[in-house]
Image (cartoon, rainbow, N blue to C red; front, side, top):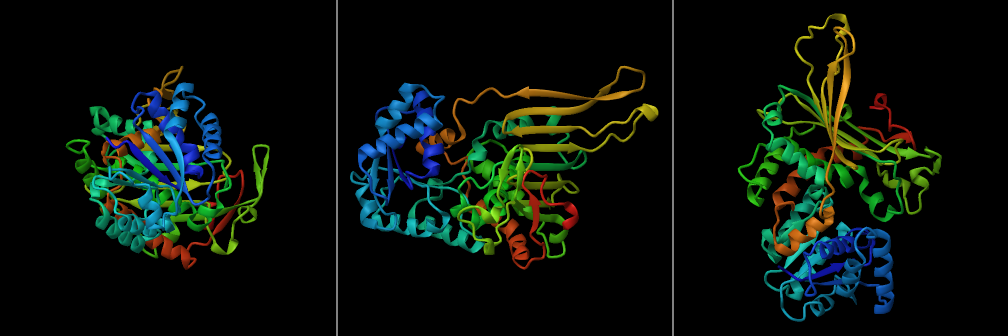
Length: 455
């Protein structure tokens, strides 16, 4: 197990909101001890006292549910170093003893190629691991170039292209529900399933992330990685094991089998939009273009929807809808599996039933099944919903990912060919949108998104 984690961009939002709480949770669960060290590096330059005050404030705010002892252990294990990721001398100074280290690039994706080159020049110790946040590259060509650079630095098993969605409890339960229950796997195909919705609708707005979000938009931020990853787990064939090779081979097979969208398809099978000023509940929200740091000329979308088909024996004829939007009227974060209606209803005119729906709630994490049951009178039907709440996980998603990095288990990481195949899926859409084949529709904040008639 690697005991030293170096985070470049170590005083940014990712470290504050996710990595520090994840380390605290690992201490609380007994997965880390006094040998562990987390070095947070950036170019700002601050005293150790200032840094420790910042760490304590972030832990109190973002990790308040972990024990005080775990937060104190995290603070004691964390230190600050001023370093420029593009300076091989600065990076080498963080690797003084030649022992394997985990390098976490909590940086804008545009800096990844330069960062990887610097790590190569600095002489990264053998056995070290590299962690990259999504998106992996800024387009298909960028992903291919980045993968070539990484291959020159470390073996593929030492590259962790992390996606925290894959470590969420409900996502893990999606696999369990599918693969450990005969009743579900027997109907998990296009003969029984008409449509699968993979939705991440949120009432949150930009929340100060213009520096990142305005350069990527909803399609790259959510669909190209998070939602396509969920699609892979839903649609893949049952693997022999959940080991890194079996699981990742089957996910790549799904991406390869997604039918490419043509220019003729895209206006009918995609939507994009950007929010206007409006009300979300009783909260007034400015238009996206009026948010601080936004350049309206970039045309970044805050709403993206894509409908995909999979050309495989199992899924031919099933529609897959992937959607993510900001500043919407309600939060909806789930995978909804819509079953086909029964072939015959023997209940007469009173026997009207909606098709069954199986929902995997992502936030909050829950599982529900919407069925039809017999009503109170003869030959009448009524809806019935069965709901189960998931047990709270031992670790938050980032805690699980960090533990995998430190132990060297890449099962939940994205493999190089997987990252490239995901870009293959969205590249025709990005190209068509750049030519305005699908106009950028506008929708009021607090609404359900852009109207479908605008496609």
